[in-house]
Amino acid sequence: MRDSEQPDWKCGEVAGEFEIKGPMLQAPMQSLSGGWQTRVKLSALLLHEPNLLLLDEPTNFLDLRTQLLLEQFLKSFQEACLIVSHDRAFLNATCDSTLDLSNGELTLFPGKADEFLEYQRELQEHDQRSNASIAAKRKQLQEFIDRNKARASTATRAKSKSKMLERLELKEIAGEQSNATIRAPQVEPRQGPAVRCRDLSIGYPERGIATGIGLEIDHGTRAAIVGDNGQGKTTLLRTLVGSLPTLAGDVRWGHGCELGTYAQHVYTSLPENKTVLEFLEYEAIPGTKNQTILDTAGAMLFRGNAVNKKIKVLSGGERARLCMASLLLGKANILILDEPGNHLDVETVEALADALIDYRGTVIFTSHDRHFLKRVATSYIEVRDGKVTQYRGDYDAYMYMVQKELDDTEATRHPNAAPKKSASKPVAVASGKPPANDERALRKQINNLEKSIAKLDQQRKETHEQLMNATDTQSALKLHNELEKISGELEAAEMRWAELQEQLESS
Image 1 (cartoon, rainbow, N blue to C red):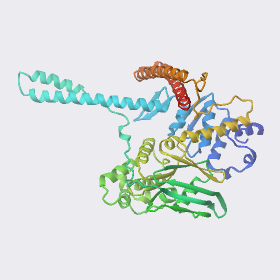
Image 2 (cartoon, rainbow, N blue to C red):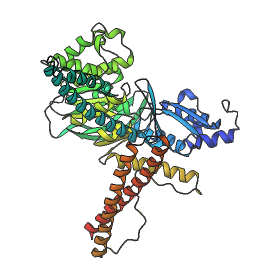
Image 3 (tube, helix red, strand yellow):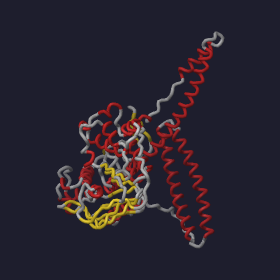
Image 4 (cartoon, one colour):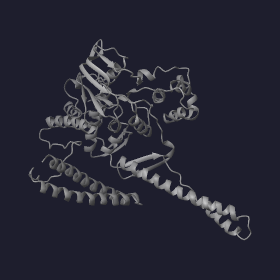
């Protein structure tokens, strides 16, 4: 009310859009977790009724439900918005154009972030092929010049070729210098449970967080601990590694488990007087090549003379990256990671995801980055309302459950509003279903759909190629919109095909 000068009913209405209601409206701001404080700030922004929003990393430290609420708000926001973010899932959900700032240049692309990254990748591949062709031509010309420049009869031709050689220049390929290479620890795969929890209670002497926890995580699993801010994800991680005592029950790790931990209480207590390189050499598996250590340090942004920095002069973010580098060089077959992407750029997060997917050990981690979660996790453990629930389904199944809860809450608050379609659940194309026993009709529909899918796929490829070759923004935007339409039709047709196939198999 003080910030916006709006009446209490209006403030309560807007706060309700972000699930801030009841006693929480009267609570002191400092009593709220970071995620809920962000919801209050977003509500305050809305109450000013702005026509331009400037959001700098708005999803940092936001839990999944708050991210989805923010997405819903931005999708319905009718005015302009400029967002700076490393969260690809959030950008793809909210933005229809992409601004890329790199190598001193700002480039506008009329499409979503993933489409821009694909365009950028294809452009780099084209430039690499072009450079290879130019390099071969340069070599051919140089060989001709070397053979003929000394002879009077061919010196003129050699001079002409020399001028041609000068005009052949290799293209500078943007983005090549930022590629990070990360190698996961080399461990032997193991079988059976890595950790078991029975009747576990976690929390602090003055306040319990969750009780009656029963968990079993198998070797080779990549388990993501998820849940809203303040629910106890980090508390569960700390209890699993033993840095926080249990309130009841026990945690039992399997035989031969070697834990490597990446968490704030670890990377704030590194040896102060060692250099970055000395620390990594000490933590690395004996016999690790020096170049491997330097490559891992470089991937974590310790390049050149930075490896000679003393740990005592490193910032919090640098210490976090150093701790991650030491884990990657070690021999742990269990990695416990608390928000591993917080201090890394987007390329390094991608490289870390690749490394964890290749890792043959077990990973238990927390993250607010949905793109990272979807790529890495093979199971989900939710901490919520004093309970811990283990989900064996994939990311889309978990996302659908969360989105459905938000939609149900929205329907309760606005009973007369039109129901929203859940983004994560496949929606079939409207079409009359044939009788379950009519196999012939099913096969005919499937055959027709396969022809449509092939046609749409070809149209998409042709339109995509035209977009890549577009020379002006207006035509590129038109082609982009056309590509979006074709892609939507193709996705709907593929979903319908999958639905009919399922009917055919069960008939």
